[in-house]
Image (tube, rainbow, N blue to C red; front, side):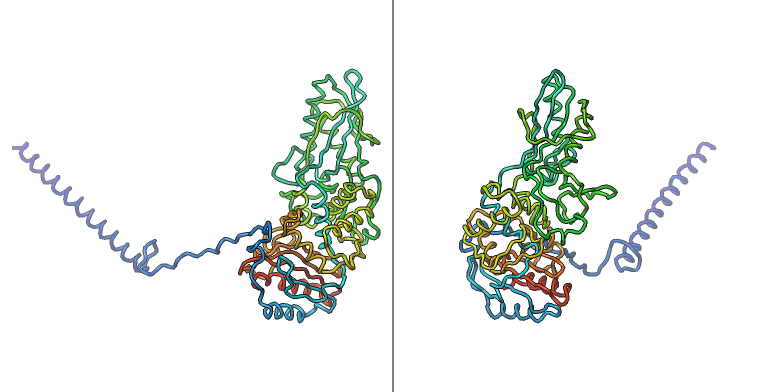
Length: 485
C-alpha cells in the first residue's frame, strides 16, 4: 500500500516538473520575442531595427599616376580650353598680396604653348633651381650607379696594419647596419666594420691604426653668399667625400623614425668625414679589433693598398629623388660637383655651375637670362625664367634620358615638400612639383596629369610679394587647378 502511494506521488511529481519546465520555456520565449519586437521598433536598445539602413560610405582611394615615360598620344592629350586657362591666370593675378613681380607659363607636354605671363623675365627661383642641376646630372652621370665607401689596408706588419676609410661622395652613410629600406643610411658603417673585421681576421691582423681620406672634393668651400641663407649651418653642408646623415648633429635631439623624411634642420658637426671615421673606429673596437687611435683617426692624403671591404649607397636615381622630394640643398650641390668632375670641370662650386649650364645648353634648353649663384638655389643672386623651368619639365617627360627629374618630384597632397601644398583633395596625386621658398620668393614647377587626358608642364615664380602667405596660397590654388584644364 505504501509502495503504491509512493509510486503515485512520484508520477504526480514528474508531471508537475514537466509542466513547470514547459511553462518556463513558454515564458522565456515570450520574453525573448517581446524584447526582439521592442528592439525592432527601436523602443529598447539592440542590433535589430525596421528602419532603412544607410549605405556605409568611404572616401575613394586616391591614386598617384606615374609621369608618362614618353610623350606619344596619351602623354600629349587634347587641346586645352584657352578661355578657362585665361580665367585661371586672371584669378591668380588678382590674388591679394601677390604683387606685380611674378611670371608663369603653362604648356602641353610636347611644348605646345597654353598661356604665359612674362615667361622670359629672369627672377630669383629659390629651390626650383634644383631641377636644372638634376637635369644636367641625370644626363651626364650613370643614374643606376652607386657611391662606394671603401676600406684600404696598408703597412701590414705582423698582427698590425693601417686602415684608410676612403669616401667617394656618400654623404648619407648610416652609423648602423645597411638599411635596405631607406636611401639615407643605405650603406652602414657598422656593416662596413663587420666586413673589415672578417677580412682582418683572415689575414691575422688584430690591431690597426685608422685614417680617413676625404680628398674627393678638396677644400673648395661653398658658393659666395650662400651663408646668408644658411643660419647656423642648418640648411647646407659643404660636399664631402663621406659623412653620416650629412654630418647633422643630433646631440640633444630626438631622431625621427624615417631617415628619408626630410625637413630636418640641425647644425652640422665641424668635420663630417672625421666623425664618420670615429664611428667606424668605434665599431671595429666593438668587434674586438684593437684600434691605436680610437678617439682621433688620422687624415690621409690618399688611400693606399688593396680594398678589403666596401659598402655602397643607394642608386644615384634614388638619391636624386630624395634631393628633389625633400628639397635638399646639400645633395643638390653634391650632384653639381659630381657632374663637374665627370665633365672634367674645375672641382669647385664655380666648376659645378659651369658644368650644369653647359649641359643645359647641350640639351637645347633656353638659358637666356640664367644666372646660377649655386646649384641648389639657396645662395642669393640666382635668376632664371619660367621658360627655362618649363623646358626642363618637357625634357624630363620626353625620351631624353633625364626621367629621374620627373619621377623624383614631390606629389601635391601626398609626398615631400608638396604634401601640404594643396587647397582641397581634388588634385591629390595628379600634380608633381618642385617647390621653392626663400624670404621673398615662392615658386613651383612640375607636371600635371590632366583629368581629360594627357599632361601639362608649368612653372610659376613670385618675387617680392606684398604678403608672402597670401602669395604662397595663390600659387597653391593656381597649380592645383591645372588638372582641370
